[in-house]
Length: 356
Image 1: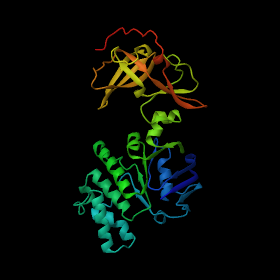
Image 2: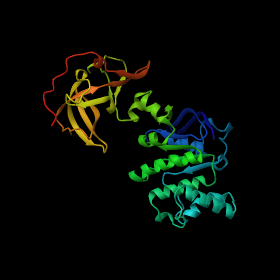
Image 3: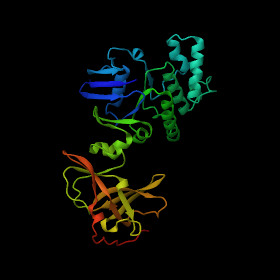
Image 4: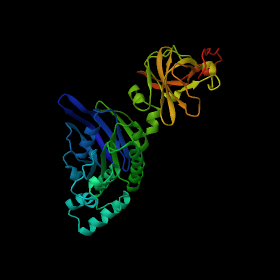
């Protein structure tokens, strides 16, 4: 189902949860509302569901204004963060609940529940009570229950927040595959950037009640429109004047350096030694697939990644630091600025100490 929101506003006392918000969602898309806590994500989701009424603005489903319709009349499926399963009902009964409210026949209920048990990988667990299920299984039951009445839109409020990291990663892939199979328009709220990038077709970055940027995960990551977006998506360092860095001139506005823009190592590991700076390793953190290195370069702290295949660096050692590019944001434009020294031969700095 296609969704359109026009000039939506919502306040709670002096707090503005939605500030003149407008957007469109195409039928069958999986959209992530991503942003910090208190940014307005859940309020927008609840207004779409009919659980909160906007102060101003309109919500349209397939061209029909739904502001005055109840959640049931909007045909919304809602999955809550804490599952909200009925503790005294088994898996079958929980999934069947909405179908009984719709007064479906016993045969229709059985067929639909069995279909959803198979879809969600819960076959064989239909007689278990919620306390007999794992967190991942509970979330699948909640998902199946929301899908049972065949809603037109599925809304999920931080659906993986209560699940441990390993199961959460498995459920992300499962959710994306299942939504694609079902073909239902879906919106989920999260403050986890990795989750949004992995699951969503499109992301809406929400902060202070406004949509800061909308686009595919790749588009937003490669072309952030504001320093906030650049910092929120990916690990970034914010700098002011960058003219002190080799290969960069003074520019107005904020500059962002991401770890993947930074190359570190000894003289044999740096691709353009003549364009490199000298840096001191201040901290080393194991990230599972790489080392995260905190560096001091000309009294500024930067972050870089280093492959586990390379020699480990120790805090206090001196390294070459090649900054390939930075993102610059000002009132005129935003975009990447490349290191000009990579194309001009200059004398490289001298590394005093060796990597341990």
